Length: 464
Image 1 (cartoon, helix red, strand yellow):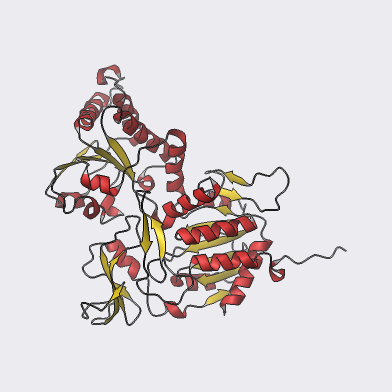
Image 2: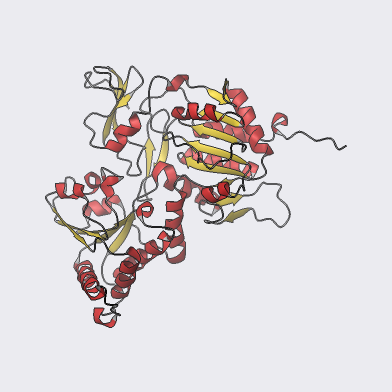
């Protein structure tokens, strides 16, 4: 809903003072973080910039600086030269039609965009991976192997009296995490940071008692010992290697006793913050502790991740195919005996595919920000970029074998839907500005329709 401006003296992110607000959207949902805060007021200014008055989120403020007056005039390009949209679509469809093993990377889009991209992938036999595929795959592997107990932001806010943060300080990447879970509540909370220093932002809440334990401990050793204690092993029955193990076990045993006595414990972790390459083992151990706890008490996990539509696209692809991201979708006319779908979180990792030269075309989708394609992409590999207008110059600079088409950001220039960080809530997005840019869904749908058009098919080579 657009309302008359409430404060014409707002300053736009571009630094121009007293730029009047062309429109104001209240209860706006921010698309730049998986918390999807929906309590914001956003102003769209006459110079096409945007601002959120009194925002306490530096991540949002930084994202809005990427939008300005030039966005609506951003042109498509082919091989470094400006082109109209129709020619760009035709050229891009030809690239994908000619490719034998295309990769759809980044995939920073919303539900509708993901649905349309899956249809396009099925038409050209593409591999699907996200910009944050490493973190997403670690969480998916743990879920596939052992299952998990999830919780929601609402449950954290209304029920949790003990929050255990493993190896993460949420406010570093998700500045409004505590505002969404603690602000305005009255009940006492214990916030325990395991394997890291306390999050400085947590101390701002009077009802929260903050402490840290084992800040320098190895996370794998910590979780191995903690897992043993959670299933009833006595600290004295576990081996002491003489390097402080007995003290660590005593500390973890005391924490486990607090978890058993709590009304509701929430374990918070960030897959992207866990040390690799075996982060899935850490997540699996946390899930095991939570499941064991639920035999006698109540507990759940909250994984902080899913940035740039990662959770949304993973959910959507799973609905449509039955498999999560890092899946190869075969063409309809595949060879006999070839599986229609093949999921492999290691084989279909973007960085590995590019390093090994295993793809012959890249479709890069970056609608939430100017996330550039990997530097490891071979200059000779054709690239189709459906991107934020701020990526236009980089695409032109790449030159040959590159098509760029500017697309709308959901929540800025188009509506849409995203899954929230707790994976159980789908939030609608309203366009705060509405520049005349096509959505990822619209472009992917047109590309799919043109894949098998005569001018998109590879030329027949005459035999000598």
